[in-house]
Structures are given as C-alpha cells and as structure tokens.
Image (cartoon, rainbow, N blue to C red):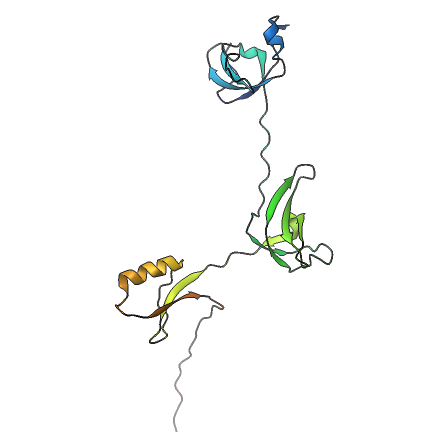
Length: 203
C-alpha cells in the first residue's frame, strides 16, 4: 500500500497492524508515544520519537502502526500589537471611558473565552487587560523631517522620513559654514487655496 504520511508529520504510535498488536516488548512500551516523521519510504517510515536521544527507536516502521496527529489550529491573530496606540470605543466602567487613548502594553489570547485581552493603562494609570473589541487603532502619524536655514528661517523641501536622512542630505549638499536646525514638520491641516479673479466696471 502507498505511504499515508509525509516528512514532518506528527504521529502517535499505537502498534496495531492488520488488526493485531506487535508482541515485541519494546514496541508495547512505545504505545501512545508521539513522534515526527523523518523519512518516508514506499512501505515504511523512519520517525524520531519525542525524548529519544539515541534515535535508535525510529527506523523502519510500518506506517500502519501510527496515527496522524492533527495539527493544532492556529491561534487567531489580534488586530493590535505591543506599542500600538489605541482609543476606547466601548467603555469599561468609569476607569476606561470612551475616548481614552493608551499604548498597548501586550496582547494575550484566551483560549477558553476565545478572545484577545489587550493590556493598557486606564485613566488612573493602572494596567489591566480588556477585551479587544473595546478598542480601535489610532493610525500612526507619518513623521517628516527637514532642516531650517538659520539665516533666513526657510525650511527646505522635500521632507525626509528620518533625522539620519536629513543629515545625509546636508553632508552631500550643504554649504561650508552653513548653520541649520534639523526640525520635525507636522501637518496640522490640509487646505486648497481658491482665488476668484474678476473685473469690475470703472465709471
């Protein structure tokens, strides 16, 4: 018969083949033991039993003596991670009101409840774990950096993503003796200028 396993499969030894258990004493001692498939042949497999440091137990087995161990379901991934900035959208008592903003200190998945607990500090500064649905992500602010010429207070463009990029630009293009300040540029409002031009009749 064809081999039903592949390399990397997790298997459990039950010892039964063609309806009968192997009578080898060593085999009986392996019943219930877990192993990982290492080599797949046409009619046999080599496995590595957990906690078998010698590796001598896992060679030349009939695959029928093993059962596949189903892979554990992957844990759901939280929409938050450590360091994220979040805002409360579903209050929890008076210590976690709607609108409260905090930094995520950690995220833990509760397999019993099937929810992620997000650890933040409440309005008192006390750390606690709260259900994920109580928060929304505050999008990170895109930071921009440039430099201002001290002689005329003009800020150069285009802007750079890091202070290091600004310094690298200055080394390549700056003038000898030029005095500048490296600044962070913060956009506070986006507007469009519309100018209406018209003629007025002169009497």
